[in-house]
Image 1 (cartoon, rainbow, N blue to C red):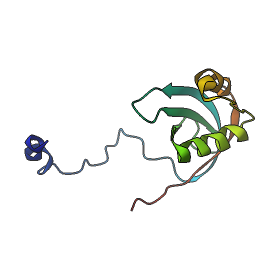
Image 2: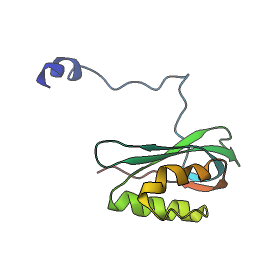
Image 3: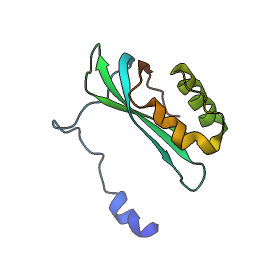
Length: 116
């Protein structure tokens, strides 16, 4: 890893480019689920939900929610999919069951949290 120090150390943070999208502002949005993926990573597995915003502002913007399948992430996923009316009864059925979320509409709340 130390052989990357000569690249990392002098590198300055990237400037915001005019052709890049700024982050979606904190707020409450109407959106639909465009895509759900279940990744069998080393450990823990991950679920990613892609939302497409429809309004009231930021229409057509995309946001993602990623859940690691540990205790905290599983609890968040159960809460969020429960709000959408879906209950997955077995972990082994998750990859299939989560596809029922695609196309569902709902309200999402985006909130930026500070990193410590």
